[in-house]
Structure formats: C-alpha cells, structure tokens
Image 1 (cartoon, rainbow, N blue to C red):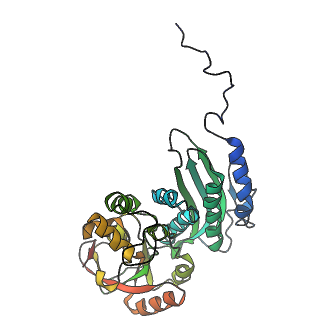
Image 2 (spheres, rainbow, N blue to C red; image 1 turned 135 degrees about the horizontal axis):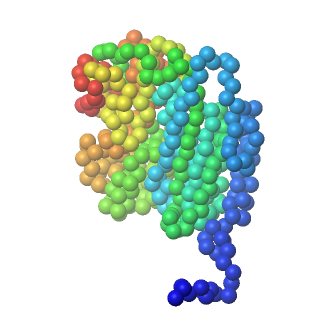
Image 3 (cartoon, one colour; image 1 turned 180 degrees about the horizontal axis):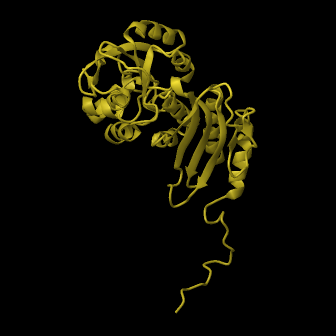
Length: 353
C-alpha cells in the first residue's frame, strides 16, 4: 500500500512554514547592501545579486603577481555572542582573521566572501554580522564581493549561527613570505593580541561557564571587566601596521598568525629546517582573561599555550640587526610589540621556556 498522502492540515505547505523565509533573507540583504557596496572599487565588476562575483584581475603595476587565498570561521565564539546578545563584531572577527592569515605570506587583501548559516534568519543579527564585516573590509582596502546566507532548520539549533569567510589577496612573487634564511641569533617579535581572538572558545566556555559557574555578566576576577565583553573583543587586525614593514625585502623573514595550536604550533610552520625557536614566556604578561580560564578550569600550562594565543596574536621572525627598529616602528604605529625570543640551531620546533 502507498504511504499516507493525506495532508496533516488544510493549509498549503510553503518554504516559510518549513522554516526558511526567503522574503526575510531578501529584506536583510537590502538593509546591508549600502555597507557592502561601500567596499567596492573600480575592480569590482557587477554588484550584489549575481550568481558569481567578478573582480578585475589586471595588475599592470606588478611583475609577477601571486594570488593568496584562505578560508576560516569564527567557531564557537558565536555561542558567547548569543549568550551576551551581542553580534556586533563577529563579522569583523572573521575578516580580520582571514586578513592576518594571508598577511603571513606578505599579501594584501583584494576581496572577501562571507557565509552566514543559521536555523532561522534574524534580521538584526545578520545586519550586525555583515555590517561589521564590511567595516573591517573597508579598513584594509578589501572588497566584500559576495556571500551566502543559509537558513537551515534541523542543521543549526534555534538561535545558533555559523560564520565563515574566504579571502583572496595579492603579493609580488619576490616579496612573498617566508623569505630569506634566518639563522641562529635572529629575533622573535611578538605583537599583543586583544584577547582570545577566534580560537579556544570551546575550552574557554567549558572552563568559565560550565565548570566555573560564571556568566557573561560576571567580572573577570580581580578586574571590573565583564567576561562577555572580554571574550567578545574582536580579533585584532595587524595589516595596517605590518604590511608596510613587509614591503622592505630585508629584515622580516616570516610571520606566524597565532590561532589554533598556539604560539608553538603556528610559529613552527614558518621556521626553516635545523632552526629552533626559543620563546621566553616571561617577556610578557598574559591578560587576566587567560588566568581566569586557567584557574576556573584547572587547565595545565602546556594546554593553555596550545589552545590559546596567551596574549600574543602574531610572531615575526626578524633579522637580529633589524629587531630594535621593527619593534619601534610597530609601537609607533599603535601596536604593542616586544622581543619575546630568538632562534638557535636545533630541530625544527618551538620551545617555550
């Protein structure tokens, strides 16, 4: 016998009644269209609404242009944003994360595409995310050229969102990083982070909220800063300070964006063979948020340094005779930079001492 084809109600079934509201998606996109279009320059061909985004690939000012691409997500930082009902910097998080990633190849950003996934589209949340992404793109001369909004009830939980981004940048072939051959005695320069950035939130939430019994409104112990505010500080973008330095072929050998895997896991990716990096953890003081996570969850030191950036968002490998001037220039540009270690002969790894 065939299955029961009788409707469960007298009302016709629509996409909206199944949980996907196309009209709301169209309305939400219209709201942010101005902010998105403001990131477009002469190289962007067409506009919002095409099946694919187009960008002029003519670079007559360059001899050997190389495209650099990356994709990443903000992870479970969105969970904290939902707890605090504050999504105002989540778009900025993903743009800055991706910009920093390609900066480690010496590239400047050309264009960015975002993915916004949810169970049911909430216009104000979508607006906060995309608008902050557009603002972050504008700050580094990057076009927000397209994106995808996916409303998928049954895949995402109610009230849950997912934010992912992909970026394409450009670098002259002979200026790409890593470059040169660092040797024993060359220096490691650390640039301060603004918090957890976009990594380690599953461990942080477990330690602070589930084990520690705290809420986003509670202050970090020993401070007046609410946990939600500290956890939602946006991922810092290092492009405007670092890119001019990288245009000087000498001095800066490589850069490591400190994301998942911590300082050791990411710095090891840019070291040459037979070179060991020694990072002195006593050259900086991790911000109170990291101490709060470690205390609440009784997290071992080595796990803290593997899961979190511990206050260092980017590490540069710099020639010994250039280290002092690099630190000075970075600090003059508004960063907080300091020498945090050096290279020595040894196996290709990172020691944190």
